[in-house]
Structure formats: C-alpha cells, structure tokens
Length: 256
Length: 303
Image (cartoon, rainbow over the protein chains, first blue to last red):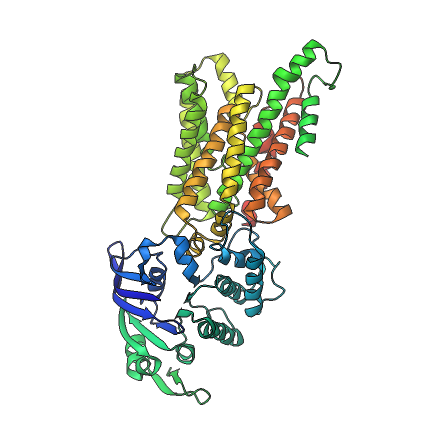
C-alpha cells in the first residue's frame, strides 16, 4: 500500500507540489486529474521515488520510500509513461523483458519464467506476434501498448500510469483500462492513473483526485469529485454533466 | 576468426615469415617485433571496441566513441605529461592516461548534460570542443620535445603499434580482459539504460552506480590502450555498429562480441598499415580513421 503524507516538491526555487496527501488501497484505481501543469506527473514521479521531496513522506507497505533501493521499489511499483524514441534497434520482446529486471539474477540472462511473463503480457495487450518487431518501426499506439506490456510483465502490486491512453484508438483505450481493472481485481493490485479523459476516469476509477496548481482541489469518489462546479472551476470551461446510459456513471460534456 | 587473424597478421609483413625453418633474424623479427605488436593490437582493439559499445549504450547514442568524445585525447595528454615529466617510471604512462581519460569523460558528460537531457548533437559537440582543447595543450607540450622524439610522438598520437613491447602487452591484456568482464556484468542494466535513463530508474537500475562503473572502466580501457599505442580512432564506433547489425542490440552479446571483433579489426588494420607501403609504415590510426570517418557521417545523417 502506498501512503502519501503532506508532500511538497520544488524544482529549484519553484513550487510544483504543495501539501498533497493521498492513499491507495489494494484493488482500487485512483484517477489523478487536473489541467496541464497542475503537477500530476510530478506526483506520479514522487510516488516511485524518482523526484526528491522537499517535505512530507511517502511510505510503501510501511517503509519510507527513500530507505528503499531502486530495485526494491521497482519490485513493487511499475510505471507506464510516455516513451522516448531510442536510437538503437531494440525489439519488442527486449523492451518488455526490461520489466523483469528486478526478478532473478540482474547480470545474467532471463529465466523461462521471465520469457513466459513477457509473452503473456504481450498477448494481454493485443501484441501477439510482435515480439521480434523493432520498437522504432511501430506506430505510436502500438508503442504505447508495448510500454503497458512491460509494466504488466513486471507483475507488481502497484501500477503508475501517466496518460496511458494518449496515443490509443477507442478500442485500445478500453482495452488498456480493462486490463488495469482486471489486474486490480484479480491480484489486488492498485493503480494511479493520470488522464485528461474525465469520462474514462469516471468509468474505471473508484476514486478521483482533482489537482489545481500543485494542490489537491478535491478528492473522493467519482460522484463526489466530478461535479459541474468542481470541473468548471478547475478546468475553466463550461461543462454539462449527465449519466452515461450504459453504465450509470457520471458523463462530462464540454460546451464549446 | 580472431586466431586466424592473429596467425595471418604475424606471418605477413615486409619480411614474410613461415612458421618453421626460421633464421635467427626471422626468429627475432617474429618474437621481438611482430608478435608483441600483433598481440598488443588485439588487446587495444578489444579495449576500444568494448569501451565504445558500453559508452554508446550508457549515453543512448550510437555515435559515442572514445576518440570522438575526447576520452582518447584526455588519455593522450596524460601519457604525454608522464612522458615528459616521469619518463623513467613504467607505470606513470598508463596511470596518467587513465586519469586523463577519466577527467575528459567527466567533462564531456557534464557539458553535454542539460535539463532537457542529452541529445546527439550536444554530446558530439562537447566531444569536439574537449578534443580540440586537449589537442592544443598537446601541441603546446610537443614543442618541448626534441626533433627525434617529436616524430615518434606524432606517429604515436595518430595511433601507432610499432613501439609495442611485451610488458605493454601484458598490461593492456590485463586491462582489456578485466574491463570487458566488468562491462559485461553491467550489460543488463545497460540494456535498460539504452531505452532511457528514467525508464531504467523506474524498473530498478541504480543509474548512478552503473554510470560510475562504465565511465570508470571505459577510462581504464581507453587509458591503457592510448598509453600503449596512442589514439587509434573510430574502432569503438565501427566495431559495435557492425556487431549490432549482426546480433541486435542486447549488450550481453554486443559487449563481449565487440571486444573480440575489435581485436580482429585492429590486427587486420595494422597488418594493412604495415604492408601497404612496405617497407615503410603507416600509423594504424590512419587506416581506422579512413574507414571510420565515412561511417560516422553515414550514421549522423541517418540519425
């Protein structure tokens, strides 16, 4: 379980995050929402210890994050982030196997269990038959799914996802969230997802954290947070709210 | 293949040697001159190629190369200082070369780094700046040398195996074997760092430690090579590139295979350097640069 107590993050003299507290329990998806520059990605990076805190503390299963090695953190937390292009011809399977780095011998070769986990993850993400393809030759959406497959192959209890659906078509957006949902339900994993799609958040997240200018504006269940007033004040646009006829969840429509 | 290359290289030269019925002179050419030279060439090639392959993965840049990054010139300046001030100590040259290589690596890395990360152009430019700066200091020092030493030194600067000795060979052999083993041990973390430094951190790599080890060992490899044979350029660029073309990007294969292929490459290049205008000789660095520079331009354009 991940617990965040009153953290602040500063980049040089600039305050990016101030007084953020949150908690993620086993089995739940938490959506991190907010306009550009609200500090969503910074919080996500702080959660796996790759951004230093100015104050406050984060604990992973009761241990302070800064007392853990990168290896111990990575064994519990996997990240799905925007992937940058590489200059080398790395294959899809090599990329996904990077998710297995913390398992077994770090300096040796992958075990059959590693290969199996990687192949399973590829299958899950609709990427069967892609193993030998080169990363640079894939489309943005395909690459995004490979990045998800790598996190799935890591088989961690916590998933951090930074705009995982940014490059995906409609069916793969749904696939992405379904996979995360299943992982949380089946093995009690938890996920924190940054997204700009309020409707996807409403459909899949148990709880929502709405950020504005580096501070928590509102947090709670989807119904509590995704109100017309909250959304209009944070995003500064006019919206209409109603109920999705298929799922009964809140639906947000922008008024242009 | 390495063994075949060694055998061919030993037998070919301005004096062609069979392996039996050697006269005393031929025996002396074989054991005192040619064998140390060929063996040293193999070690230098292995060191430079393994260092190049690892630096490329670490810096996520297929153009990173000890010679182009200024690491070789750092080592050359170190060697030069040892040569001018501590000529009598055998170990002064490799030690100073190692220090010079390490210092140059660190400087280029700090210069190429920016908030936005490190791009290809910035790294290459930093390398060029450090290289030219170090070159000018080297030139300054060469003016302290007398004419006879000057010629030898100029040749050595371009990468020259003709001064090979067995003791130089043993030192370079030790460094190249040890260095390649250590770099190979970092191959899996390097695989992750090749994807991205942040990705590597996310998935459990102690990025700072890997960087320190690879920079340190690459400096050791380049330092000992340069101390023994000057700056043989482009080996660390050409060889890993060819190895990746045939086996892919996995550093667990690329690092050790680059070492072996690098040994073959330098031995063959030096054989050409010794024979093409025999009985006169070219520095081996001229041959490697002749092949490497066009490849560099090709890679840069493709980037």
